[in-house]
Image: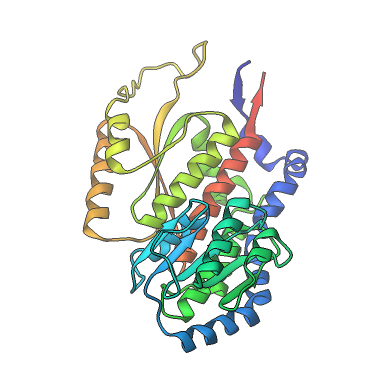
Amino acid sequence: MASWFDESRLDDETALAQADPVLRELAQSGARVRREANDAAEAATEAVTRSQDSGRPRAVIAAGPDSRLLRAVLEPWCPVPFVAWPAPALPGWAGSLDLVVVLAPDGSDAGTASAVSEAVRRGCQVVVACPPDSLVADHAAGRWSTVLPTVTRDQLATAVVMLDYLDRVQLGPRADAEGVATALDTVAMRCSPHTDLATNPAKMLAISLADSNPLVWGGSVLAARAARRVAESIRRASGRTALAGDAEHLLPVIEAARQHNVFDDPFAEGPAELRPMLVVLDDGAEEAVVREQRGRLLAAASQRSVRVETVTTDAPTEVARYASLLLQGTYAAEYLRMGLVED
């Protein structure tokens, strides 16, 4: 069964009403960050006080399956050794001199609960962001443990709570929960379903995605993580190929693209060829290696007549820029899902 993209559905009230639950969830991203930051404020202050009493840890261990987001933020910044440990355990050397931080948005993962329990048993300093009545919270009870209570089960909002704590104890970059929430609100307004095609960047990106196989690239560590998440959203929305990777992984795909033929008949019978399209998530990173990789990708795309779409953000912090790029890409994926119809 063939599918095609009907862009008129992106401004159609009936189609928008059907997609309202998902779009409303995206629009409330900023509100979830504010709620989590407010609810966890008292516990975070207690954790900061405890950290001041015990001094700087020997190392920071991010445990659990959601540790990779913390790694993307903290590795370039953390002033002490940092390791992400997604396995349901801890490194053998972890002990009372170390800080174990855990993100558990749902709080029901048995492997994460096991890692938290092990950290408590070894006497580590433990800070866990999770629902207060969850399995993980139950295993976090201990003299040197703090639970930062969360309720939304939103991974990003939960991460912001933890990153704000790490910022306050000078183990991570500036997080600024309100700045992240404001960046998300800005995206929600610009990409609102009530904003028409002509001025809605997410709808315009969805139209470009509809007749292509996207290659999503981000230069910085956080932009690259956002690229992977956006590509995943596009795959779920469309069932089509969407790749995210480093420049050396995407360049061969671009260089193998067939040159665009200006004489191709767009109305010819049969399914149209889906050409690659480069989607650049630009968070403003200007390190030399990022500029070099971006230049190579853009040069290859120009040589092979591969279309390029750039998603930008002017949010004030690294975490806010990551959140902004991710939400813009997620909106575009949902609009892509809306517009695809089957014959």
